[in-house]
Image (cartoon, rainbow, N blue to C red; front, side):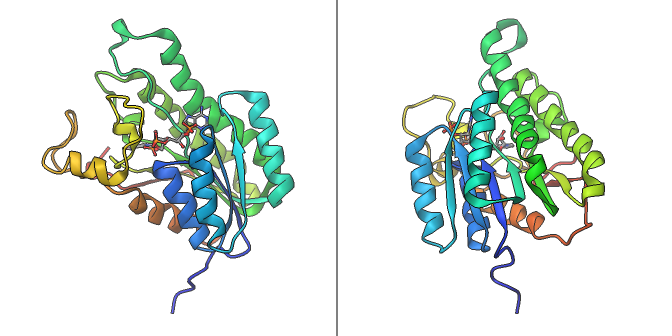
Length: 260
Ligand SMILES: NC(=O)c1ccc[n+]([C@@H]2O[C@H](COP(=O)([O-])OP(=O)(O)OC[C@H]3O[C@@H](n4cnc5c(N)ncnc54)[C@H](OP(=O)(O)O)[C@@H]3O)[C@@H](O)[C@H]2O)c1
């Protein structure tokens, strides 16, 4: 029988864990037995996730932080290490897609803020936790198929994810002597609030998004794609986190249904 708690005794950090994919991954890692630190800006969402994690009899550290802010991120990383100790699994998941227009119509502030959150945030958390990541550790960076293929709109998101993608390879090359594996996860389209193009104040649940797009994919998606529940991404992330030491590094694990 397979071990139901393969991550017992391990400590994980998940950024952007208040909702969507990050929330599902944080809960998946906690179910697998890991203590989990969760970082994001929205307190109510982190409180909800934290309650679910501690109900699983593992420890949870909650850090309210804007990951585009270097000093706040350094403080948040220090606090989580003080609370939970060294880290075995880091999931750089937090991300945003703030500028949907064409370059000619884009807002320079939103364009750059997307890069700051997605690329700089991933770099900052990694930078401040690196000395506290144990041998045999795993870093999982949330990439996107859009980082591998140009889109007609959303250039800031596309550029940011291309940056995350190659950052993974840089880190993998630097960290293999420490036996830390670094890989990209491409989730393909997933039912989260990132599909909330109307920017309505209340969040969409995965079930609402799946219902909304059950008959037709949003424009721009190839017909073979399928919008997935965040739990499907969590399953892959937990599987990546439980790989033996010395497994894949500098690689990309994808749930997308088209080749890149
Ligand atoms: N959904 C998809 O189809 C899809 C496809 C490919 C890749 N991805 C990637 O998967 C990741 C998760 O996306 P999602 O769909 O789950 O999005 P989501 O539902 O919008 O969740 C994003 C998470 O990131 C956090 N976050 C955003 N900006 C932040 C900041 N400045 N500082 C700290 N936390 C921040 C959010 O929390 P706060 O707002 O509270 O800070 C939230 O917890 C992203 O990297 C996204 O690019 C998603």
